[in-house]
Length: 117
Image (cartoon, rainbow, N blue to C red; front, side):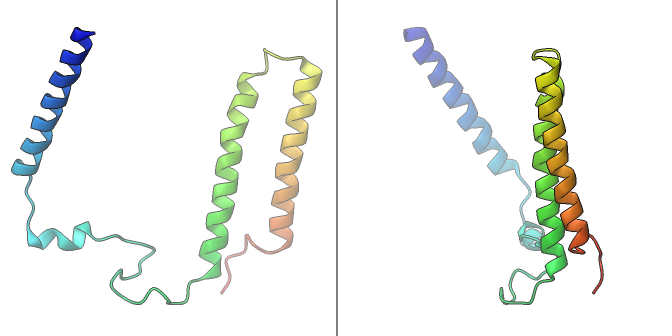
């Protein structure tokens, strides 16, 4: 127990020394203020936040997030192929891919994938 306490104290001291050294040695200047400001879709962060925003950017972002999460759900489905019954795995993967294709068809039918102004 004493060894664990000593190790945690030593690790805390070393990490604090490294953080203090990085703050002292870093090259910060007032010229880098623009680099430190947030950049969001080409908007100036110091202007009004109520500027009109293109709906196409929002729709593409939502579509990307949906398919990104679905890809994260497909990977465990692939790795579980050898662990479960083939019939159950086939039925589950078919249902999941059918839902993906139905969603894609709905987005295509609603013209969400067309980039027109």
